[in-house]
Image (cartoon, rainbow, N blue to C red):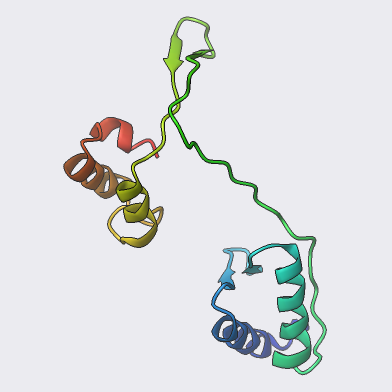
Length: 140
């Protein structure tokens, strides 16, 4: 964008966020504006709307999109995995298991145990409500 016109960009991002509930606009510590959407095509359309409709054709400097792929566990693993510590003195055996639906929805919807909650507070909530080990819960 034109560095001399940040208010126009801020207003355009605010209007974009209001017009599309799937768009999330944030500002990094570096001052970079991040527009998150539901995929590359959605993002492309949002940026076109931002530039053409909400900023009256003002030029934008747009970087390549960063696409996050996420996977999930749907069932308890049938295989036990082994990992060794960096110093090769410790072995870790584990199996993957899904979270309960209630725990998962609490993490997504409830402000008490989401990613933006302080680690100790989140760990205490998970221990009290879902019988998690507090020390383990602090690691997420």
